[in-house]
Every structure is written in C-alpha cells, then in structure tokens.
Image (cartoon, rainbow, N blue to C red; front, side, top):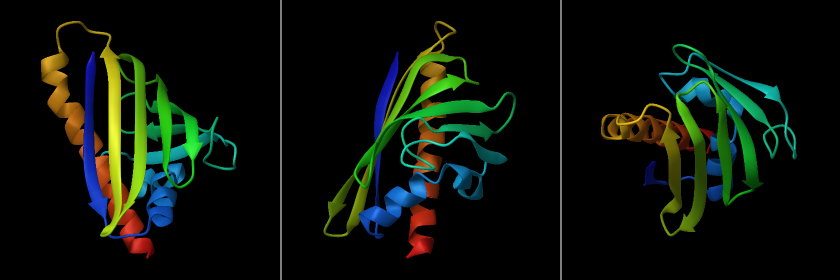
Length: 144
C-alpha cells in the first residue's frame, strides 16, 4: 500500500480554493497531463458534490473517479473507479484557513495491482498529486 500526504498553502480565501479544486470540469485547464476533464454524472449538491463522477483523460484509459465526500469549504474525497492499476484508491483533500490564506492537504491511500512496484510508483504519484495541488491553488488565485 502507498500512503502519503502533501500540503501547500494558497493566499486565496478558503471558499475560493475549495471551489477551484472541486471544479471537476476545469481540471484540464490547470493540470498539464490532463487533456480533458468532464463529468459523467453530477453530484449533490450539483454539479460537483457527492456522487459526481469525473473523467480525466490523460494518456491511456481515462481515470474515472467518484466524489464520496463533499463538505464545502473544508474538504472533499474521491475514490478511483477505473483507469489506473490500483484498488482501494482514495484521495482526501482538507482545507484549513490560516493567517496567510488557505492550507490544502491532499492525502492519498492506494494499493497497486502490480506487486513490488510501490517504491517505483511512490515518486510518480507524489509528483502527480503535487502538480494537481499546485494547479488547483493557481486556479484559485486567478479567481481572486
């Protein structure tokens, strides 16, 4: 199993950061590796809440993820449904107001389907999550 947490800080208000990071259709606008991001199904509250299914087209089959928690503006979580060689893949994003703006922590827990490659995949997954964090924060700061 791979498990880690990455944290970054934004100068944008917590609500702005949350809205940017949960704009599932907008992920392709700030993540270089994602060619297209769409919603297969809207969630509650619409469109980005619990039950939303987002499709992220990168290389190979698209990553299909379901939003399983949505608590504006303090956090959300998703689980991978398909597209990656993982199982029990859960991402949990928490936001916290600070004196400087908003702290965003992204916790990832996943099990790879191919045994023995955890050490090789850990830096790759950390890089991808860090790029998503940086992109979401940059998108929030552009909205200010």
